[in-house]
Length: 484
Image 1 (cartoon, rainbow, N blue to C red):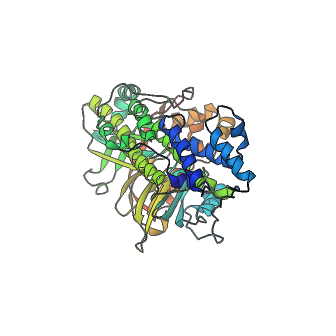
Image 2: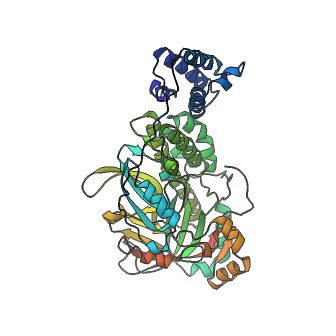
Image 3: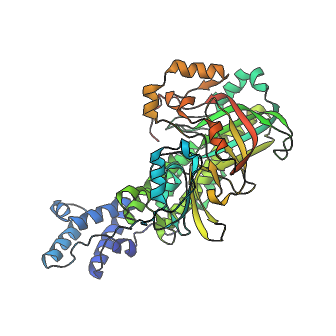
């Protein structure tokens, strides 16, 4: 694998057309990169700032960019290499129609963000799920199809490949009442939460034998962190919980009607995915200039180096997130001395190459949305005291074959801390027979929409196959402050 380089095309995109100057910039940029003085994003950011105003760089006596800054100043004295204003991609003037499921329960901010998204020059189609709320760039619960060779890091999300995983055990759901202490202890022993959490014991590390880890400098630098955090769950709304799964006859293939012990988890690609999102979101915003209201929807081109790098990293993060869940579920199953009868899982922060109903090839970004292609199984959770659902997609074209990824928040975390009383949360949990380990007021059941209302708004998108009622919930302790 070749070492990472800054191409002449990337430097030329800064507005440098003079061949001699291009060579000088390339020599400095790739020298800094080769000797690991700065990363690629920092180098390109400094070069653009230098072109805009070379004087601060020229005044720094031993500065890394002083020589080329002096050269730019001299050229401009002679009227050459005048700073060119970089063009900004214009949004479409007309706002394309897009379906909104559960419109009456969606905040104005999310609608406004989706309207901006479908105005992108690369946008092909969009849809808004009933759990939608405002986020960065694309709203959470937003689905956006773009031209097939364009991908938007912020439309995938910061937690790349955040996903659900459900293990169904051939044991009665009543085991939760009889073996509550044992099941609670298993969560304590085999789950790890917190922004800096790691796991010392791994069952399967074969993912780290993959060649992709050597594809880029970023991936190489993050491999150790990813290894240490394998089998952990982070913070926020991530959880691992025991619950009772209720299945009707002939609904879930291979699982007879009845109630079963089930383990449900929700988490993503941890610090590895977060770092990848940060790196390539910055590159996208640097390379693709958009009006301020759309700046977080900057895209990468899959035909360019950085687009390919992100595509490789995103897909690796997807496999890593899946491996995280499998570590947790397999450790707990091993401790129970029973193999799951069935496992169901799905991403809900990802981008897929797909085709629309008319055969148009597109890149479908689902940011907080569950894939719901015809016959595709998925999991839509509620809150810590309300049910989640195993669903089967109907392949509805208008929703871009998507459904909600959960209940969706009705208030921010800061608003939750200001308005929700602990005694009200405690009563809610007691009334619903829920034991919670960790968590805080920002994840209280009342910060979420009514999951039944959300599900009623998407009956045309999915069929419900089974209902999961949580009983023992493990989340991050709110006191954990360590950095990822």
